[in-house]
Image (cartoon, rainbow over all chains, first blue to last red; front, side, top):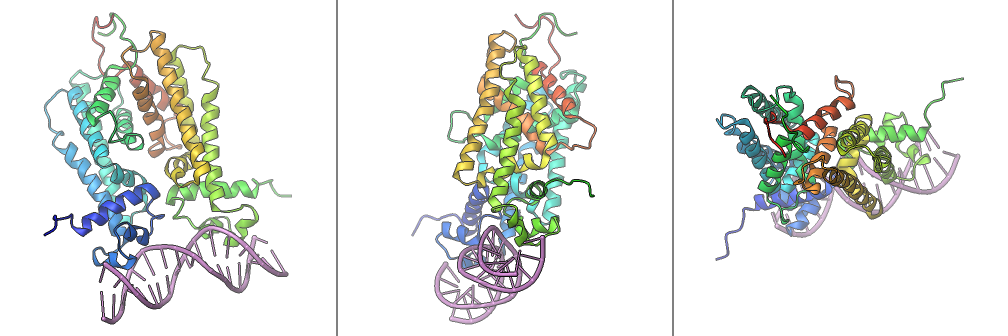
Length: 200
Length: 200
DNA sequence: CCTACCGATCGGTAGG
DNA sequence: CCTACCGATCGGTAGG
């Protein structure tokens, strides 16, 4: 009896995530992928229907992870600043725990066929709206500056958490929480030394 | 006499930037590119030596634009906050004025051959160092919070200015200066309503 | 800048 | 899961 290994299909998806993220979707051949798993090119088609199915599944799994991480925060009653810190932590953790598929997600989604493409743009709108609503709540609670533009504020937040896929290294010193805490501190409090007597 | 048009080589580079940014480098065939210019595939090779030359030149031109935009700011004597605002403005303007080649730059540089690849990583280190130095100067001047980590602060700034390639639309309402001003305001002052009596 | 072509490689399939 | 193969397309070249 051997150790029960991951289903072959999952192994294929894992290898595809790594190769697609390193070389890009179109620059990875099915024979490259099969070679990683000790197979011949044609043998892959016993487990999958085609190359694009791999891309679709990688992208779908990635967007599902973001959705899951942020969804229940939508109605979280905490103050906006705490909610933002928690959302950034969860968002960055999804990136950090899935560096390969996150990279594929951000780089290759434009190569999807219309149906899968539309799902990604819809996902992007949902996440965008989540952060805009969070900022609006913060303004209404009187915690965030009233002159913030929710759209641009969401853009800035999303820049920070998404761009992490380009530089974060999972084996390094910083955990996703460290990154999120530092980012949240800077974003919330600002880079400038606070001025005495400023404010209302 | 006809209007003097752009040299053919520049037309090829412009079309290549657009196609590479839309479809990706490997998914764009030389016949696609030739078709955009009303040529046959083989005719391109009267003007260029090969496909990778196009990628190398697009990436080199993009990195040169960033270098030029930021270089003379290095020794600018202004306070760090003003310098940061100006650097972000210039950085975002390069992205905004070169959406196609900026996209190619961020997405396709990993597909370069070792020499060109090394130049890009070296560029990235230079820009990284520029922003870290700027943050360090701000701390030393007493203008920025002393507890900032220059590395993470530079990461946050670079996230904001680089990620613009994913959402900025040159024909839209906001100029690069608008974006930079809003981002700089948020980063410098923070999202929170200032607390009365906070600070030293 | 075109026509015609090269060898190589692609995603995918048939049959076992 | 393999062997053997398919038509299509790739980047690039020769000769004009």
